[in-house]
Image 1: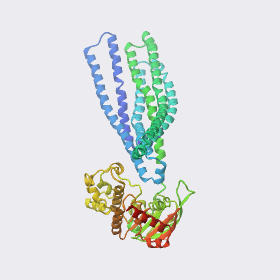
Image 2: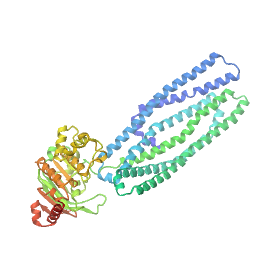
Image 3: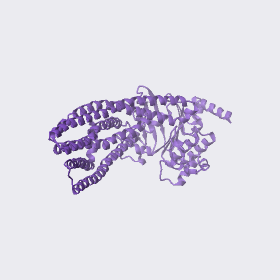
Image 4: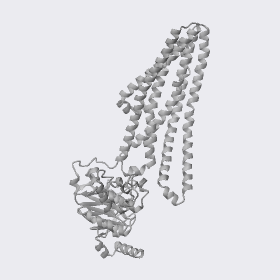
Length: 584
């Protein structure tokens, strides 16, 4: 029953709804007592061999009225209790989604997408059942059971009632013992579902790679093994769950046996009438549901409790990147200015002993372009991640117009940054909506202009429905170069003070690259641009180029200065220039 205490915040908030619902549910249980009583009265009349048509019509009318009242009562309790369950579902899903929105990079490194989806779907549904089926089953079984027992005592005989309910304590004890096993089994089951969800999401997302490398059979076998493991775990749930109904059947059977034997003796001894015994047996029929409901209730509660614990554990995680120490008075105009890095060292949270950046020190004036070059793993993307505040724990500071970016409200900072990552993500909607993602109210002419600046407009016009062409999941219908240029168009439409291109031109040819860079040179007048790349032609016109190696700056200067220094940059320039000539 602990899950009801865990959800106490919700029931307190929705107490009026549940009071109304439980009231009508109680009236429903009371109305259910009428038909058995009427059957007993009819039996006594028939046993005496005399019943008038008026009495018969009156009894039939009473049953009809009870049925109509049951219909009305059931409508209102369903509306209130099921409505409460739907409201709990809405609140939990909203909480989880809002939580996902504020969590940072490290959170998503710890949790896979499929697992988060399982929390937001399967676990939420299990908790929702507690506020719906759980409340219904608990209240209905208690009210119906207690009211039926009271009716047995009042309308039949207290001695027969006392003897008939003797097996009930054994049912309660058995249900409690089985419930302990069910909670653990359900917890394992939900975790297994998350793993299966992860595997499904990963395989579907990576279908192209699977087929390209001919790993379809291997992945199918791995998926099959995971399904088998999940079924094996779920069998434990089914094993403990399946013991509830037989336990209830045994108890009900004992109750009927006791009633027939002892009740028959009472009728023989003229203590009870035939009609009273018929009513009592009908009341036992009403007790069948409360007894079986115990097993059903424990199933719902234990599954809901295990799921709620998983959700709470997720919600208890706090983001490392917050605005706790931010200056809320800073607006976007206050942070327009020079960008300055003074980083003594930085290490990723999961490997605190391994420093990946050392002595990163440079200043970029407003309107200048910075080029970041170096081998894979040199630290280019890490420098960008710190600017985006994906990590805040580093020795040193990064400032914008003299303000430490950790003191700038996150939304204020990110509105001034347009970012094109290495792996571009496109949504399953039209090209127009993908480009206008950050500026939903942008006019069509502005979207077209952004596409022209990224050298994408001609490609779009050749597509079946132009800017209304659907790109498919993550732009599956587009080439790598088209996806990159669409992401650049999206960033340009944002008109931010800082533009970050993280290897964003790797999938376009040299001609397209130069066209985009020429457009950027005009577009970004007076605005700051950061370009991380392996292709040196992308940064040859930059105001400052940093060559990184093992997280340190080993060369710095303009294109001409670095060529004159004849270091790594000059060597790589000659190699790429030669490769381009050979390619031509």
